[in-house]
Image (spheres, one colour):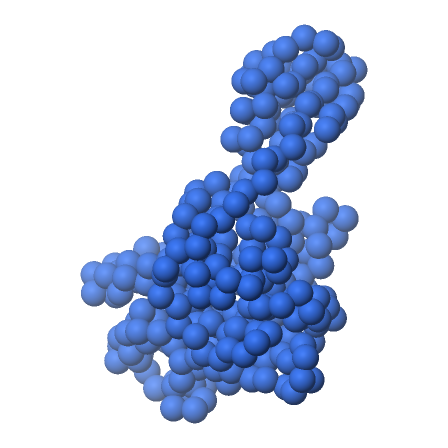
Length: 331
C-alpha cells in the first residue's frame, strides 16, 4: 500500500518523521522510522533520512508493506475465572497482565492464556485478540468478558456499541474532588506529540468519550470514586480524570506536573506496590448473547488497592461518603 502526501506551507521546516506522524496516525514513531531506514519513504523521488527538514510543495510517498499475520501460541497461564459457559467467559484480570500482544510484549499475555484455556477462541475475533471483546490496560485489574463463539462475539460487540454493557470502576485519584458526582463529556484521541499517550482533543480531532463518576470516600489529598464508562476509548478514565486535575494514583503516564509528591514513605511504598494504577474494574453487566439473560458480576478491590485505602482511612478524618456494602467498592 502506498500513501502520497504534499507538504503544506505550514509544515515547511519540520522534520520528516515528526510530520509523517501527523499523517499516519495508525503507525507508531518506531514503525515510521523503520520505514524511512528501509528506504520506503521518498521525498520528490529520493530516499531520505528521518531528520530531513521539509519544504513546502514537496511530494512524499510512503510504501507500507502489509503486516505479516501473527500466529499466537497457547500458553498455560493461570486465569481467575468468574463465570464460564459454552459462549462466554468472565475473568478477573490481575494488574500487570497484558491483554493482547503488542510492540512491548509478544508473549505471556491474556490472549495466549485464552488459547490454552479455551482453544475455541482461536477463530473468534482477530488473530491477536482471540475472543476479546473489550480490554483493560496492563496496570488495571478487574472484570472483562470474553466471547467463546463467533455468535457471542458479534452480539457482545453490538451491545458495547449500543452502550448496553455496564462497566463500573473503583478509582483512587490525587486531590480532593469538589463535586460529589458528575459527567465528563470530552473527546479523546491520540496525543499530538506523544504517540503512546491519549489526550482530550477538540471534537473534530477526537472521538466522543463520556465518563460518569461519583465520590465514594474522601481522604486528605486523595479521593476514592466510582467511574462508569458510557463509551470505551483507550485510557478513557485515566485521561478524563487527569483532565479534571485529578490523575489516578500510580499513573506515571498521565501524572500532572502540579501533582504533589508523596512525602509519607509508607504511603509511597503502598503506591509503588500497586504494580499499576489505582483502577479496578469492579462491576460488569451484560445480556447473555445466546440466552438473553441479564448477567451481573462484581469483584472486590484487590489487596493492592485495599491496603492503600486502609492506610488512608487511618490517617484521614471520618468520610461523609463511606463506601457502600462494607467498603467493597462499586456494585
